[in-house]
Length: 289
Ligand SMILES: C[S@@+](CC[C@H](N)C(=O)[O-])C[C@H]1O[C@@H](n2cnc3c(N)ncnc32)[C@H](O)[C@@H]1O
Image (cartoon, rainbow, N blue to C red; front, side, top):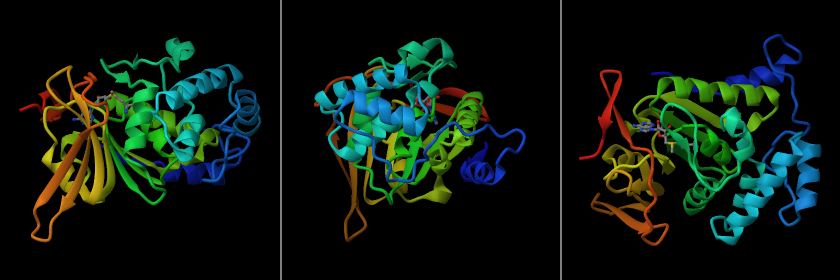
């Protein structure tokens, strides 16, 4: 298991100047929590992002198209989430061979038998947990890193766990490279390679938890690590046929815990990568009961 914070990479970058081994900055204007991309005009957005973020206009056009579709389908509802969608460069989190497909509606293969969730799904799952700037967030299933990158535009404390060690290491390397290029906001993300069923005890409680792999029940450790009044979003159901639930935790005066559930897609089935299990350091089966 490894656990590392990217803050040190961000600090190293800030101090480094032209230090060897640290990528040169290519992001002209850094994220400071206040950068505001144009939200209502495609040309204005693309010009703004080329100038301020040094990003590729072709990818920016694709990002805008997908953004418009996500707004139209009500996967994104407010300006903070609109900004997060438009700021997150999904093209850095897909495989090279899928670059032209970065903003397609569906999930894409990212190797190791797992996928990056589709952009609408990421947008909706993020929107429903209503992330606030001071929130501490836990993600189970780092995968490509896109979901936590997206969260970095909404909050400053993000913890993410991935069970597949080489994938966890690859994604951590992507964050480090991007921090080196000037995406300093990814310094807010702490990564860990472990079995997310058990959560991240030392950092609990969390205001919000987002689970991106499917399971047939709500893991009790995750519910315990959610603060009173906190919200979790989690795909629950049999293999390949989950429903995405929003779960709100309330602890009564007598200590009883209530988990109020609602289906964020009104009953639609959304298949997810399985919530697998680590046994003796080896991934074996799933946590389904
Ligand atoms: C749909 S994919 C990744 C989505 C990811 N959030 C993204 O932005 O790309 C789900 C991820 O959950 C991981 N996963 C499955 N079981 C896990 C567990 N017990 N603990 C942590 N991660 C797990 C998978 O390896 C996979 O990378």
